[in-house]
Length: 70
Image 1 (spheres, rainbow, N blue to C red):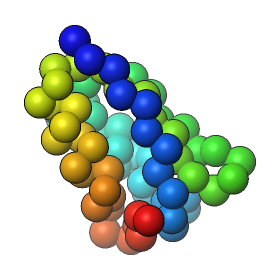
Image 2 (cartoon, helix red, strand yellow):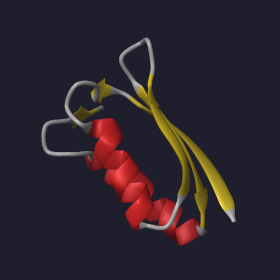
Image 3 (cartoon, rainbow, N blue to C red):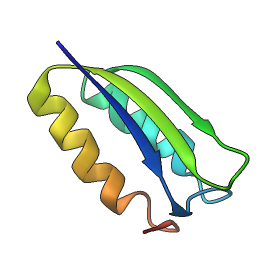
Image 4 (cartoon, rainbow, N blue to C red):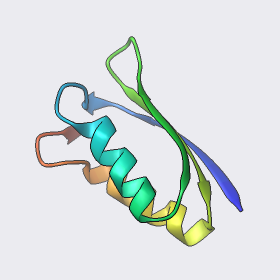
């Protein structure tokens, strides 16, 4: 079991990023949470198998279609 804390910056609020990240995490069998931050970023904390977390981090670099991750 591994834990990863992510801070995602860019155009990630108001584009469905949080809901999409939640769905992706559930699809991968991860537990944790995702929230919007006051500075316009999104924070995620996930736990699970290392290979599943790696897949989630890779997804976070892309995000949903309307997002623009820096």
